[in-house]
Image (cartoon, rainbow, N blue to C red; front, side):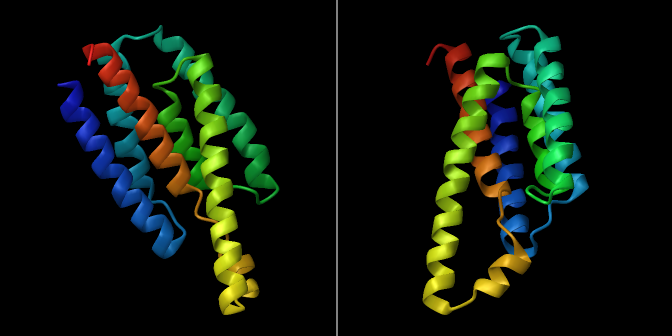
Amino acid sequence: MPLLLLSILAAIAVNIIISDVKERKISNAWVLLNFTVCLALALLLDVFPLWQGLVVSLVTFVIGLGLFRFKIFGAGDIKLLMGYSVCFSFPLALTNLIEFLLVGGVIVVAQLGWAYITAGFTDLKKRGVPYGIAIASVSVFNIGCLVFGKAGL
């Protein structure tokens, strides 16, 4: 069952990444579905007390609100990260944060390089950075490690 939920989570992540790259928007429907699957995984895996994941999710919301206010992250990115955060204990949440910021930094550098080649800096500034790519890929990877660790693989 956890592998099935992980597969569904990966399929949702692919759709979220495609949406974020094309439109720079993450649909609330995808975020809600993502949260539902993550909550089911958190309950099923029982790796840590669920309250830790809920606290991490709440802290993510509070910090994300500030980042959204200063236009650093979009609202969809914050909601997406909140959904994934339900599956994380405190140490794993910090690891996930560092990893997705590193991957996000690589995406920013790649976009800046592309903008330099095509002279599209104004378009880059207007459209923003699709952090959903980094958030979804790193979070699904870390949740996958939880699933396979729990399965003993």
